[in-house]
Amino acid sequence: MKKAMIILLHALVGWGLCGAVIGVGRKLWGIETTLVVHALAAPAIFAVISWLYFKKFHYTRPLPTASIFTLFVMAMDAGLVAPLFEKSYAMFASVLGTWVPFALIFVATWITGGLCDA
Image (tube, rainbow, N blue to C red; front, side, top):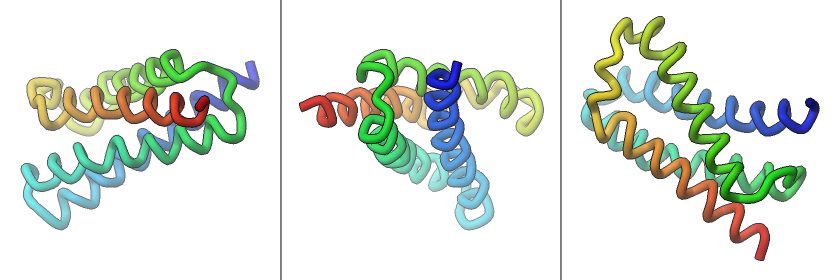
């Protein structure tokens, strides 16, 4: 149980930092610029988070970790962000706003884990 909580806590921190990028970006720039910045920031954030996770804990291999982190972000976006903050699931129609960051989070975590294993 402790191991699962540690993995999920890392995913939560990454998701929260990505949310902060969106929140701050909306105040500073238009939505299109914010989505581009978020798409670039998300894999960077998760590369750092996963590096910290793999260096200190490494309870799971890179592929399952990438899956857990990505599925956690997807679940939080679908279960919390869309219905409560956005009041709409329209965000999932945006390739740049959701699907590109999801894919890049997965890839960044998987690659970082692989590099930590090397």
